[in-house]
Length: 450
Image (cartoon, rainbow, N blue to C red; front, side, top):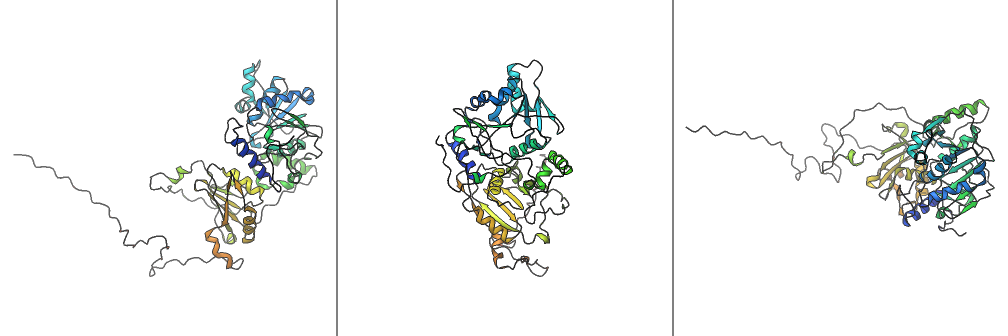
């Protein structure tokens, strides 16, 4: 069957995600939450597509089913509970473990089961499953942004579904006979080049849409477990259960060497916290802090939020900054991070200024920054082509020999007045006289009349 969305030759995973998200939004094919960008789309007709899980032969003989917590898979979770099978749902972002077992209340009604299948029900009626639990999953249901009839799958770019599967292999919960199903809209079935699929990417055996049941007969092997060379130290810190699994596999004699961090990405000694300063205010009286409330500003290392900005130490004198402009309104910092990963242009540090439609990317050297500039040419998000260029403060450094620190403007001495910037009036400027605080007038009372 001909695909609705055509994929250009040389497209990246990010390009494919963007095309699918844009198409669904443009054609109003999704329910809440909107927009669908950076999400597993909750497409219209998802509940009907989920009901087709019961048509699969594997469903009748399975006892334990793992279903992702995505909104469009709510119908699949309900179906598992109604069939009185064990429902396992991954812990969000794997923060506190791998699985939660959903346990409905005693004598649950249809409405109770419906509540249990929602995201709130998953929180309220779940029991954590430890690594030592004897779990045997015969059926896995995952969400997707795009999938091909050959079984190649693209998620939203965070890698949790792939990591969950690798962890299930490591704990013996799945094997080569486990069936993997995805539920998507018909437009999400596209042609995905095989060269985009990596060794850690999970493939699917069945695709369920509102109109079709597709058996992919995928010949590509699923991940054999956790591929530690794809895991970095930052991911290990974010996912505590990953540390336990790594220790277990290390004891078993397996190679658990982690992925090396980008050049110069070693974390410096944590600086002392400075006293908090009052936020600056714009002319309208609104604090800038309030203007950007809820918007992540500093992202250090592999995107870990930094409560204290890292200082530019002497060892970081060669850091080169790239300016990224023309970021459209509504873009999330996570969308930009995914795009940077796809283009292999991950910086040491990302400073996000979404309200100003820009971001600043710090790289370890001029050479790394030049490579990132080349990789980011033509990058488009939400139909807007971003503008990557060397930051203004860096442009004069092209003639500076490598390793030589930048020249700094000498500080003004007591006898030498400091030069004001060209575009900033000096303190002694005649058109901006110094304001004097008005002297309050003394109110004179009228003398009493005689």
